[in-house]
Length: 288
Image 1: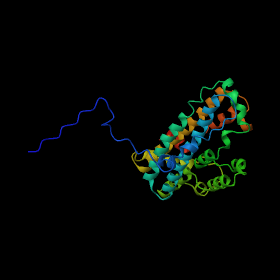
Image 2: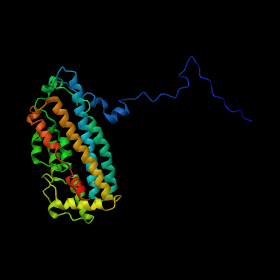
Image 3: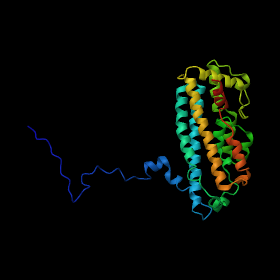
Image 4: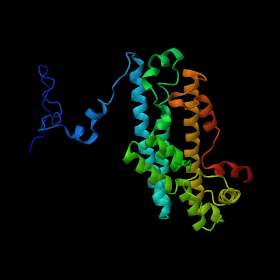
């Protein structure tokens, strides 16, 4: 009869003798982690232009925001493509992921939200003519929401690749355009003027679209279209919160001064914060 093996007692003089094996540490070149994440590139993109220690958090937070814009654009383009192919479930999955990503994006305001005017002024000059409205990836995000404007391509004429990407996005259907085309294919009365609108212009609300969403919300609450409407509303709410957090952070840091890049600063942001994306999803609720 075989005797069961007994665990070897730990050697008190060598506590690591029976620890799990350490991970592989020796690589010919860079680590697989570095090859995939490019962490060394990311962590050496910070080139400070002032001596103020607060500039680092401002710069890194702004760069993090750009990365979140990139992820969210990817999600909304994925959702738009799925809707175009009548695949609502993958579109919902992408929209739900984007909601979590928008929450993370909005949290990016936390390190900046309590800047005093003196703290912001200590490195504001380093921005020069730089301003957030010049962000190409944020502009693509706005275009996907239906906030189209050909004039917003002008700042990017000096970057041919970026300009071409924005011009392509300007002429493509927005996420909301794809949603409304889906509603039409599902039997809702969406006017031709909406379905065949000039895609390079900002989306304008339509009474017929409002009626279509009213019908959706009066129907099956567990149906695909109602769930799509709610996913879009989650997105719209977080976009509204993003704009308001931006407004509050800017008002706190610089009051009513002219914004960087020559914008109207707080006045411009106040105007933006008053607008809802996917407008009929909000107004239709009054008629359900």
